[in-house]
Image (cartoon, rainbow, N blue to C red):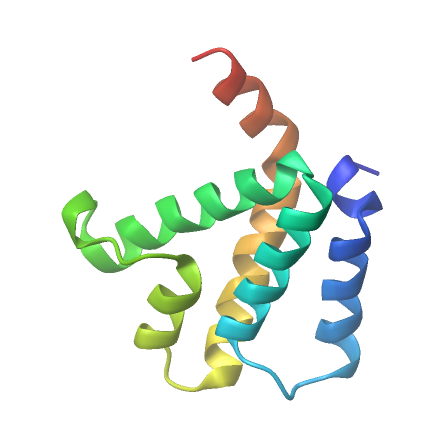
Length: 110
């Protein structure tokens, strides 16, 4: 298991995914941000950057000047409904977790 999967935030996100559908992407973003501020876990910042890079390409054709404040806003403004936005978030989270060690190695060598 990676550091990400050992995190209480990750475990809570998996709990929400499995047992709850009464939330939206802005709430997920704020939950992660609050947790990041309290825990200082590096992977959360890496996750934010990863998701924002993916969304920048997906929605803005890689035009950095078009990037809004955070991924919560980007997804919320481009989703069909809350379920759609949450589904995209978890897809990107799963991709991030699968690639996390590679991402850390690449970003530290820059």
